[in-house]
Amino acid sequence: MKEPMKLKIALPKIPDIELVALEGLDRLARYMGIGEEKIGEARILVTEAIINALEHSGEKNPVVRVEFSMTKKELVVLVRDYGKGFEPGSIEEPDIKKKVGSKNKRGWGLKVMKSMSDDFQIESGKRGTKITIKKLLS
Amino acid sequence: MEQSFTLTSDLKNNCLVIATSGYVNNVGGEAIAIEFAHHFEKGTKHIVINLAKSKVVNSIGMSFLIEIVEQLEEVGGKLVFTDLDPAVEKMLAIMGLFKFAGKEPTVGDALKSFAAGK
Image (cartoon, rainbow over all chains, first blue to last red; front, side):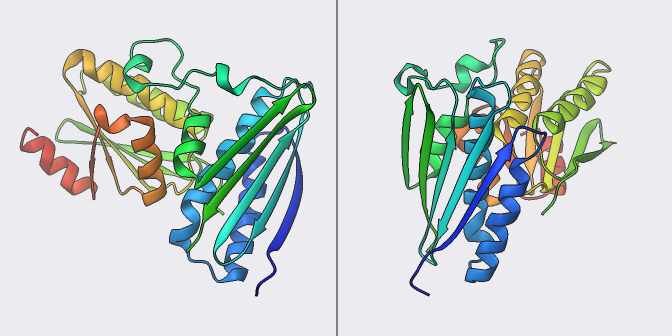
């Protein structure tokens, strides 16, 4: 199979809605014959991208659009929200030594996505934020 | 796909062993922190978190575990993770949690390491 398999989902902000996307990801992976060990990091990347978008879009009733494009070799995930956007360069990289002892223990999503993916792009503006993640599967 | 979060806890040789099942999100992370707090108040300083049945976690859930290592640091205690899925282990490494917490293959290995004073 040379053409990528694609899946598009629109997710409202309700508890654990990211699991719906993970179910789709798992089904695509099984259909493509991609092993469990290859998909674990992809699950975390998708989870982080979706919860980040739902939490920070700034909309009253946010909807996040998720697109998967999967071949046996790679997964490309696009996560888009339509919120107020932000300046990615203004986000300070978290440091565990600073987090221990501080009130705010959160703020790890971008670091996890950048570190765990094979390519990570973020575009943000007044019309929302688009995150594109590439993960090699072979 | 695993979903609902549950945990069990057990005291073994003065060590709190928490085993989770399901998605460790903010609710799961907070549940772990609350369970830890109950035992920490009574003097428990060694804790094992067995994540064998939690293949999906998120960074918000994991950030609750920073509270645990913070409190253990103050009393010379220690947290050890066991049975980690490779992807979850990588996430914890990215967050730097292993600078403050240990990891062992199994709960038995973790209990042995505590008994050996490591």
